[in-house]
Each structure stands twice: as C-alpha cells, then as structure tokens.
Length: 46
Image 1 (cartoon, rainbow, N blue to C red):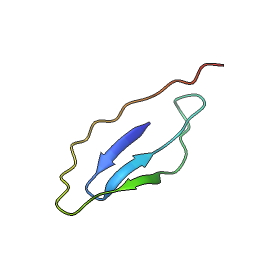
Image 2: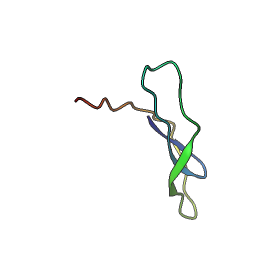
Image 3: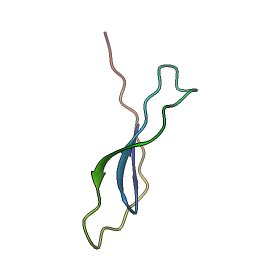
Image 4: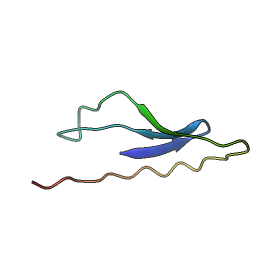
C-alpha cells in the first residue's frame, strides 16, 4: 500500500492484508507539498 503524508510518500506491505510492515519512505516531499490521503493497494500475482 502506498499513501501520502505531509512529509512524503510511504509504502507498507502485507501478505494477508491484516499484518502490515512498518512504513518506509519511498519519496520525500518537495517544499510546499500538500498531501491528500489516497491509499491504494497493489496485488502481486505469481
């Protein structure tokens, strides 16, 4: 799952959608960034 906060974009992963990893920063926010919370989940097949 990726989600945005005022400081940047974060990633959390889960194998079962119940237990989640700690947040990892994947992109820091540029000056003046205003986050809109919009989480989404990507399912990996295979």
